[in-house]
Length: 510
Image (cartoon, rainbow, N blue to C red):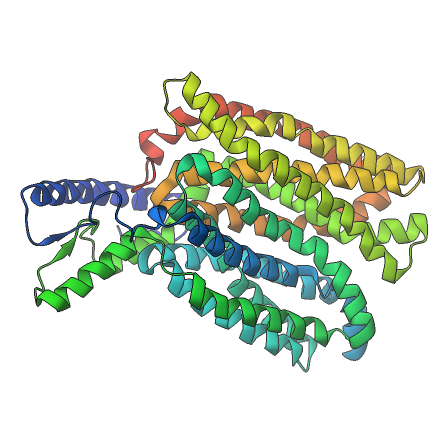
């Protein structure tokens, strides 16, 4: 790469793509040579003991896989819970620190989401170099430390800094979880696991304000962080027991290192070793998520779709309290229960779309010669995506006209179901399409999603003040309708675009 090309410009990333393509071609040649050498019983090549090798995560017993997914989902839920659980206690902490700055009051909550955006840039690529489990363990410990630091903060600025660090550490479960699912399950079995895991980062902000409201009122805002630290510590210990390494490249590399010592043979080499230096591999790994986000139209368009839906969800989270207090006279203690509607809608979406995802994939594959194309995952988004605009229309106009409070909650339930209709297929698609670099693809999605999720809600109350609840939510509904053709287009043209030479970055396409 030319030193005159500045970082984070189109020229820089295109230059990186050229380097990766060249390295990928060389790596492929080396892997072919390694495979041929193994076929001739070359004793220097270390490989798995056949496709059924029990050390490969995909061959583990179902019980082991689902226990791991449960532990992973538990930490994902806790870190998502931390994003909004102490929001009801913000007036209390602002009073304690003697501040009336409304911008800081919003920032102390949303800065966590910006940490979620920053973390995947580094954590997901590192997991593809060093494995999932070391990153999980380091970030889990860091999350507990920063959560305790939040509880002990003596100033507002201190709390904001530790909230950002807390969000950065907490992003690991979101950034790496999809890659872990891909490690454990074959393509036609991933839908249910993705549904369970993907529900947690969305359900956490629903449950958080409900518990956080009562906890802050009874024990104070600091106890919200103490409860999160205690829960995260329990799950952190569970990781050491139930979450071994799942990434095949790292598992084989560790086997190679072990055999070098046991056989006293420094010339042994993993079959999956690309031959790249650590410096080059690290540079490519760090650049890969941004490369995908900026230069792959598939990743970029799906990330934008996820970001808009995620932003809508957080807009509902940040405005629903004001809507029901102002329009229906709900008290501060009771208003948190209005989040239940969104949560029930999400759980219904998981039950419906999670199960259908795998069945549709298998059914379409049978009808098209048996090939399981990732694009088959997206068809469910077209009818499922209609739930979002319908939900906004019902929520907005029933709240505007002061219809019985159950009616707008029904609208938020449909919004929650519609969000899952987008999230489950998109996450599953990225896993199927980008295989070995699934963590980087999901990280690219999480980066853009988290940034937009932190910014869109800031426009919520000003929009409602200007347009009213009816037309304000209708505007969101109309935009949701406009977005529906995106999955339709990717379903038709996605394979061609995904496999185009310009965007076929190292090892991405199956």
